[in-house]
Image 1 (cartoon, rainbow, N blue to C red):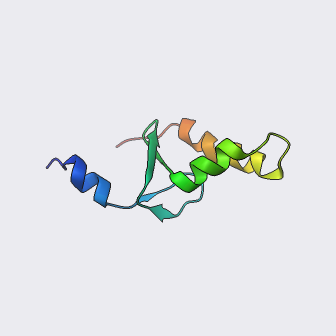
Image 2 (cartoon, one colour; image 1 turned 90 degrees about the vertical axis):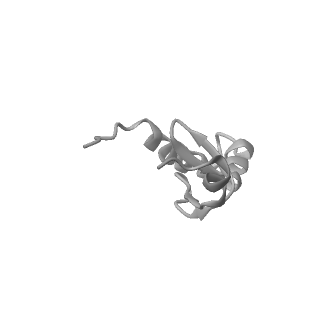
Length: 68
């Protein structure tokens, strides 16, 4: 069963960074990134203590998944 774009947009998704369910965001490499985290990442300087947290969370996008 295929879902339409409208149905997909109505569902909530779990953000790869904050791990909370959100309705608005983008998909990167098959992972959902909410708009709040996207804004925070863009505005964070590399010397900010939160920067390493964002890097760790975003690395999860590149870990391989085993599909059965």
